[in-house]
Length: 401
Ligand code: LCS
Image 1 (spheres, rainbow, N blue to C red):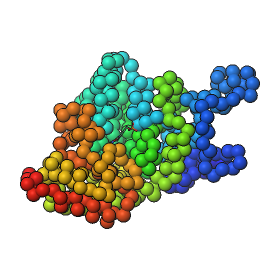
Image 2 (cartoon, rainbow, N blue to C red):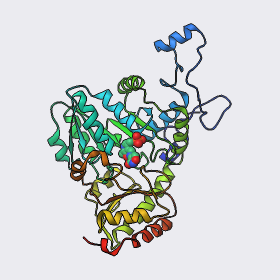
Image 3 (cartoon, rainbow, N blue to C red):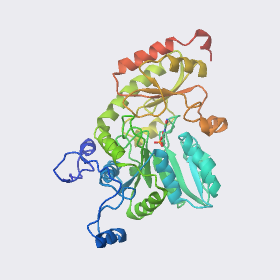
C-alpha cells in the first residue's frame, strides 16, 4: 500500500512510510521484538551476507523503525534515514562517520549547547578541531574554512538566538572546499524548511521536538541523500549502537501524521506572540524569524515557508525580570526542550546552554537575560494572557535599561 510519491506535503505526513502488513492495519504495527527467527540456517546465513532481504536483530533493522525512517526521509526529500536514540546520538553518529583525526569542522557559534560541547570536549580528544563562527554572515564561514575542513555544521534558525544562516551560501562554500554541509533542521521541521533543496548534504533532527511533537519521546534522526553515505553511516550507527527503539519509532510516526497542521498553528501563534512581545513596554528586544526586525528576515523568507514556533526575547530588566516572568507564568511551563503542543519557557544561560561556558555564550549572543519560548498550539489568547499576567509581576525596581 505504498502511496503516490507526488502527494502534497500534508498528505505525505499522513501516509508516508506505510506499506502492506499482515491483517491490513492502517497504522504500522509495533514490532516490539529484539530479534527475528530465521527460516533455516541457510536463511540466517544469507541474511547476514546481505543476499536475502529481511530482518535479523533490532539494532540493525526493525520494521517499525524502518517505517518511521522512510516517512522522515520522504518528508525531508532525502534518500533514506537513520533513526537514533536522541538528537545527540544523531549528531555524534554523523561526526563519527564523517570525521577522522586531523579533520576540522566549521560550526555555528549558536547551536544547542551539548553540540558545541561534543566538538569542544569530546571530539577534541581525537584530534578533531572546530572553529565556531557567526554563520549568519557567509563571509565568516568562508574565512574559517581550512584545507582539512570536512564539515560545515549549521542550525538555522539556531538554538537559542534564532540566528538564520543562508543555507545556499553555506552549501556553496562547503562544496567549493570539498566539505559537506550538515544542517540541524530541528527548529523548522521539513514542514517549513527542507535543507536538501538548498544544497545540504545531510539533514538531522532532534525528533524529541517538532517531529514527534508531543513531549513524550527522546529521539533523533539523520537523513542522507544517497546509498553510499547511507550504508557507511548505517554501519557506524550499528557499531555505536545509539538506535531508536520500536515503540518510540511508533510514537514519532504517529506524531508525523499531524506535523503539517501542528506547524501551521505553531507559526500562527508564535507570530502573534512575537508581535505582542515586540510592542510590550517591558521588552527590550525579540528575535523571531517572522519579525521584520530580524536581521536575516529576507534570508528566512527565501528558505522557509513559515517562521516556526521558537521565540527568544530579552526584558528591559535583564535576568531578574526574566526570572520574575518564568516564576509567574501558569499556562506556559518552565521546562527545557521544545516543539511540543504545550508552550514552554526557559532560560538558556542557566539551563540548555550552561555547558557552553560564559565566553562562548557571550560570543554567540546568548545574553544572561535571554528567555526562550517554545510556543505551543493552545489558543493564542490564553498564552498572551498568561505572559501579560507574568510581565505585570516584574518588580518596578527591575525595570531599568
Ligand atoms: N539539536 C537541537 C537544535 C536541539 O535543540 C537539541 C535539544 C538537540 C539537537 C539534541 O537533541 P536530544 O538529544 O535532546 O533529542 N535541545 C534541547 C533544548 O533546547 N532544550 O532541551 C533539549
